Amino acid sequence: MAENKSDMTVFVVSDGTGDTGSAAVRAAMIQFRDRWRLRVFRDARTISEVRRVIALAEQVGALVVFSLVEGEVVEALTHEAEERRVVVVDLLGPLIMRVAQKLKVEPRHQPGLLHGFSDDYFDRVDAVEFAVRHDDGANLRTLHEADIVLTGVSRTSKTPLSMYLAQRGFKTGNVPLVPGMEPPKELLELNKHRVFGLTVDPGTLLSVRTARLRSMRAPSATDYTDPDQVMLELDRARKLFRAQGWKQIDVSGRAVEENASKVIDAYSESFGESQR
Image 1 (spheres, rainbow, N blue to C red):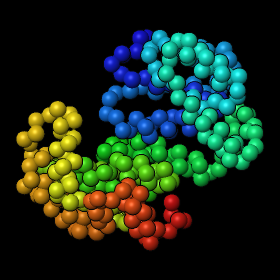
Image 2: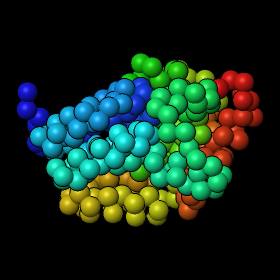
Image 3: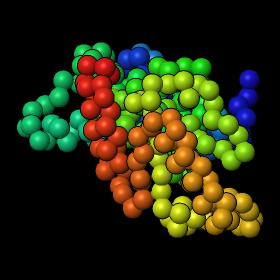
Image 4: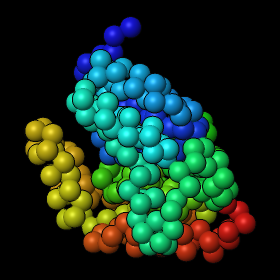
């Protein structure tokens, strides 16, 4: 069956489960709103297998992300990709090379070693996948499984902060507050110490929203960027945060790392590491 050419297709090629590549691709693709497809090729450990994948990628115009470590297989894949003009991304090779240079030791180049990674590593992978599945109010029925939930009006950095917290191992969801709509009951029913309300300076929010509309080539004269409406949205959000007892985090002029630290500190005060 032919692929829809309007959708981007990404192949993940792995000599193990493919979980690492899949999580990395999802984390990257959350930055884009275009439709895309993911196909995973697991336990790809022979030259013939990777050549077949590259040939298929050429047919459907796919980007290939691989996490292979066996030298001859990697060489075969990259050579075939060059011949067929398929774009490939080596997920682990550059990192392994730098570690080898730093430690002054030769890597083992043994397929499947990701299975030996620590539980903490896989917890982080799971957290990233959770954040992707629960971005922008998606999958509310399983929101209760989150360690942390972020909420706020549009363009208060909910998604970037969610992804950063996920990289730190916290299962994070985020739920937008939409003008004219009540907050979802799934959000209101959560433990108040797991929910964080994001606020921002009105001028900063106006600037970000205006830039967003400009990038989308959308009309600029809307409630979305009306100063009075923006002030009203922020005021209603703060009242909701206070009424629900949610900790407020002002993200104005701060890097995502700083805001994440504030969230983690508040979370740790309430639950400690044992509750993650």
